[in-house]
Length: 103
Image 1 (cartoon, rainbow, N blue to C red):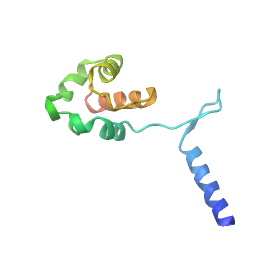
Image 2: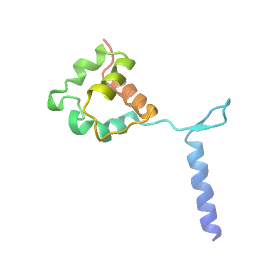
Image 3: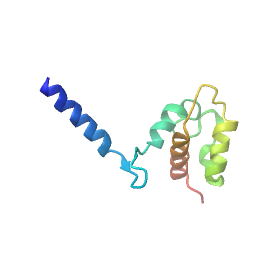
Image 4: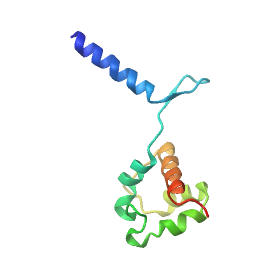
């Protein structure tokens, strides 16, 4: 029994330590991995390199603002089975803009 409690305490400590604590609200935020989210939600259709199915993301992404990318992802892309939170959407947009920056 004590081993289980120690294990639980360690896991909880690690999960809290991995996030950033907001000094005003006291809540903990966890930074999302945009690359992993892109891989699991987008790469099936667009490919790891953004070129699958004639997507041409390396050509398109640099010309779009973050707001425009969010609009394309939520309103244009055929994502009928994918539901993203605002934070996940933002992480994917950040990843896209880091991968294919504006010129």
